[in-house]
Length: 111
Image (cartoon, rainbow, N blue to C red; front, side, top):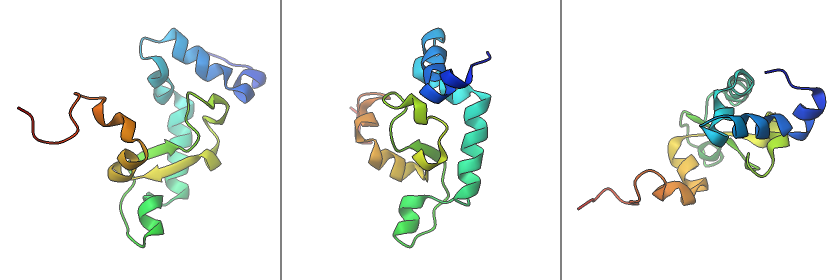
C-alpha cells in the first residue's frame, strides 16, 4: 500500500491498515514502517529497558511501547519521542489491563 503524506501525518494510514486486516490494530505491528521505527528506538536506547534504567538496573528491552497509545493517537505511531523501550515486566506493569487478555487468569495457579 502507498499512503499520502497527509494520511501518514494524520495517522489515517494506521486506521486503514487496521480496518482492512483480520488482525485489526495488531496489523500495524507487521508493517515495514513499524519494524524500521522499532529498530531505531531500540538502537536509540541501546536495547535497554528505560524504566529499569531509571532505577539504576540494566535489563534488555524486548518491547517498544507507545507512550500515547496507538488506538488513541495513531498519528504518533512512528514518532520516536512517543516510543519507550521496555522489558517484559515493565511493559506488563504499564499495561495492567492486559493481564486477563490471554486466558482470563492473573496468577500462575490454575484449577
